Amino acid sequence: MTDKLPLDRANALYPSLTTILGTKVDGKNNFITIAHVGIMNHGTPQYLSFGVHKSHYSNKGILDTKSFSVNIPGKDLVAETDYFGIVTGKTSDKSGILDIFYGESKNAPMLKACPVTMECRLDRTLDFDTHDIFIGEILETYADPDVVTDGKIDISRVDPLLFDIASLKYWSLGAPVAGAWNAGKALKKKLKSG
Image (cartoon, helix red, strand yellow):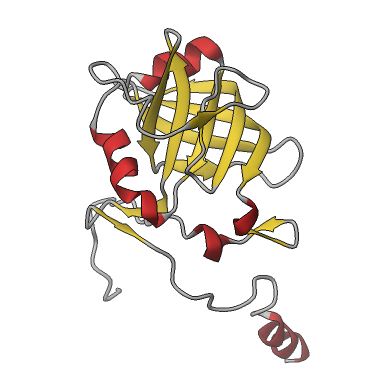
């Protein structure tokens, strides 16, 4: 027996990175806030996944154009980020809220104000009862120079928003805890010599 409380199959993978997806719907730029994101692999080509409820307006644009952007807002964009998630493009034009730029694809509008953006091509869609799971290939990643250290994105400088469904709040990052692929080396050595 355990002292842990059962929580009725609650998804405990929160907090999750908050992103803003951009696409064109019937020729008009549209953005939607999405925190249900997944890293599919770490290699080339690189793939991401997003779960988006079928009722959302942006789904049509992603399916029609086969392209979208993934914009990572910093915490300074919390109001705009939340707005993109609570207002539908069906009835509101969200294209003028923040300045837009394009990469190679003219159907994947990206947000200049976001410190990191990714231009993606739709690779496939998984059709679930209530959600579309979009799997996209990253075509290019763009970052503001001030969030890049030694040619890599410095997450502390991006200061991204994290979303928690239990509290319905946005959070920010804390301090680093330890080095990945390093913190367990002493334990590995100890157990090996055991």
